[in-house]
Structure formats: C-alpha cells, structure tokens
Amino acid sequence: MNEIKILYPQEIIQEKIEELAQKLNKFYGNEEIYAICVLKGAVMFTVDLVKHLNMPVKMEFIRLSSYNGGTTTSGKVNAVDISLPDLNGKNVLIIEDIVDTGLTAKFLIDFLNCNFHTKTTKFCSLLDKKSARTADIEPDYYCFEADDKFLVGYGLDYDGYYRNLKCIGYIENPE
Image (cartoon, rainbow, N blue to C red):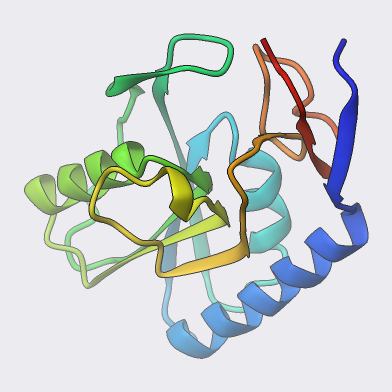
C-alpha cells in the first residue's frame, strides 16, 4: 500500500461539512429536498452532510463512473445506475465527492435538465479541483478547494482502496 500524506484531518472535514450544512439550511429553509448521492465516492460526505440538514430530506443514490481504474479518467461518463424518481417541481441537491474534470457533474446536470423540470438544482461537492477542470461547470457549494494531487480517503479511492479513511490525504506517486 502507498504512503498517505494527510491533507484534511477528520475534525476539519466535519467542521467544513457543518458550515456547508448551515448554508444549505439557509438556502432551502423548510422546503423538502431530494439529496442525490453520487456513488461510491460521495457516500461518506452525503451521510455526514444530511445529518446536519434541518429540512425534510429524501435520499437517492446513483452510480456513475469515468475512471478506467487507478488514476486515469476515461474522458467519458458511464451511467452505471441512474434510476431516479419523478423530480419535476422538486428541489434537487446533487452531492459529489470531487469535481475535477467536471465531466461527471456536467453529465449529471444535463441529464437532470433533459429529463426533469426541477424547482431548483444545486450541485455540492466535498472537493473542488479547479486545476483539472475541462468542462465549463462549477459546484454551487463545496467544502475544500483541492490542489492537483491524487486524493484518497473519506470516500475517495485508489483502485477501490482507502475509501474508509477518516481523513483526506494524497498519494505522491500513485502509479
């Protein structure tokens, strides 16, 4: 296994999530939302975030993929499982682990816009890696702006490993 250098310890992650939840509570008030978790990476973030939301929340889970394995993106988004209920007229909050190239985020927002007429659609991400962006998209909310490092932990993986770490760290030379 590779050596992990810690970037964000568990306590800092939880503080940022609480701050983000306060912003979402202010934005949505008491209106019901559909929180859509993009599996597998965003599951830890989603679970911790929704614990701090005060409005009625319905949780949905979808699975998309754009990685070939390891550290390389395929450049294409594969909809592994994207079955969703009727979201017409609903407040939708998409929850992702990281926005790097932005291809997954753009795919998902385009999918929602083509299939539903939501009341609101907001995109929130634990990490925003602007340096890797190729698609013209920005998250509405995020906790951390990430450097151009290969990040792991707290849901982020390297070949399926490290998701269970309580912190977010990086691997110097993953391959």
